[in-house]
Length: 209
Image (cartoon, rainbow, N blue to C red):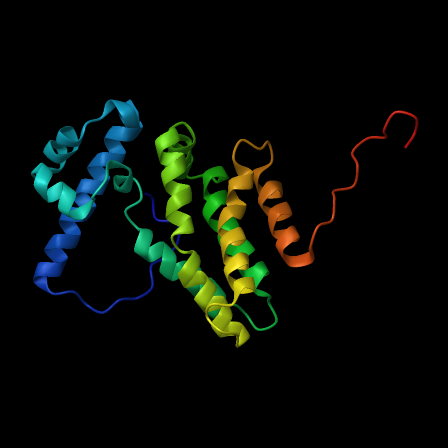
């Protein structure tokens, strides 16, 4: 996927690790290019391997399923998600910090960078990718719940922290197919931060009520 945020600074890699990372990146780049050109369902694994000049065995060592080729930065995304909680400015609530993180990720699709627009259009047009990305985000629930609990001084298995983590990760789904995706995400996080408050009615009901 296109990089949405700078990755956290990491220690220098050795030669072997650099080679593996370069191979992984070449595979992911080839896959995304072919998917954007022809559509996800019309590109085969062997074609991707050939485009990246690797064997299919090597491809599957880096990406166990086809959907994972589109989301090659999952570990980095979890690190950024946890950093949104741990490194939030003083006085900012955890739901507010997670709202900002979600908007930064999702709103990349509505920015001026055509790569992000094409990337999110690919996901929205492909049921297998839509399901995978949602399952991918929810895999971070436990780690996010532990980070929230740590910040709040609560046991790591606190059910409230688990619920907040789960619903925060589900919230961006509200933007799918919505005319105003930013507003949809903001409304979802308003619910997490303030509880249920219906939007003011846009028009008067029949009878003036």
